Length: 545
Image 1 (cartoon, rainbow, N blue to C red):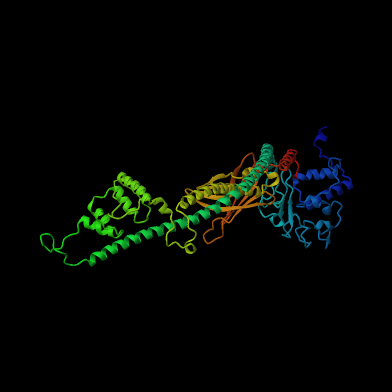
Image 2: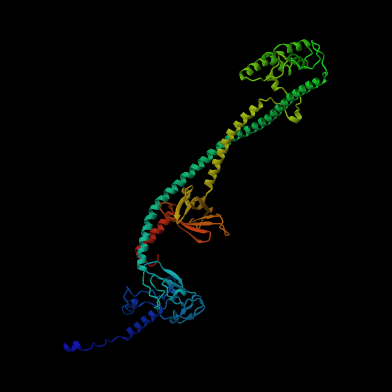
């Protein structure tokens, strides 16, 4: 036992076939670029081809997309044909760091060609494709470190951690999507109800407009006629006043001429004095009365007795008519009115009057110099009041019609918007969302505008342009122009959420802004299903999602 315990262990005999299998496995290791940690699996597959390890699928060279596996089956040592079919090379020249194929397909796992595609398997996380020039550049691009295998960079495999984090995120997104889906159905129902209400309101508004429009047009025509009549009445009033002023001027001119014609040396008075004297009240009354009558006795009485208020009215009225009774009535009313007002309306004295004069009738009489062809049809002054009433009536009815017209325009605009599939975005109409980033506040109002605010000032980032990329993006364009630059625009990516949230506002390039808007309108049944499937795949630990 002592000898046997100290004796060297005899070398075991290995069948030649097993040696050949081992050499094949090592050669496969070099071609595929597997790590040493995978060597055990390769050797076990070569030495113990049990059902769980001996798969019919071939080992793929490093950097090959599994979709192309049939084109890269090198397990039998057969030749490799370039993917473009222009060249065939021995299998051991695949990934030998020398570019043989024009399409770089023989070097998927090296940077020899520089224009190829390297596939990161990233088991436990998302697979990834890189330009082959990224291979062995000293930067860890794949979470499994598969792109850096020459020892220049030590890249730990973080796919498991990333996958765990992603699974937690997807689980949370799945739960949020589930709640957002409930809100989505509420949005859709609200949209259907709202659109139905708008349609009914538009029909009702159109009916009211059709009923009101004839009356508005009638009142419009009536108002135009009344306005024209009022203008003619105003012209008539102006002509009457001009006639009265002309008469007064003629009287004053006649009196002045008469005074100028009297002798310079009047007869001597009772005392024999021949000096000039001022005209007495009686003499002045006789003179004025003589202008309106040939009755000297009446003129003498007019100047000799004090005139009452009633007589004054009759006298003045007599200047304009021969109706004595009407003049007496008007004069009495005028005297009473003058006494109540405390004013001395009548200035002249001694004129003969007509008691039948009616001042109200006189106001409605057609002026003597009125010309129907030039001045239009004669209408009494009451037309001014008619025009005012017609204008008020038209304005009231027209205001009702314009209000209905404005309501219809708004309804047409609302019904004309594109609210996406099932009109899920309709509840966003009239709603604004804000977020503060540093000193700026960004406000987003779907279907209207986007604004950047700072204190009391604001800058337009654009007005509503519409949706893009299959209703996953909102676009706002033609905002306020930048200094010596283009007009601002705002592009908003849409995501699913239980309520509206504006976030991730950035300015990646001058005058171009981006952001993310979360809303239940994006939580469609199709989206919720996709999120659930991703979460389920990650939970099962699938390599690819």
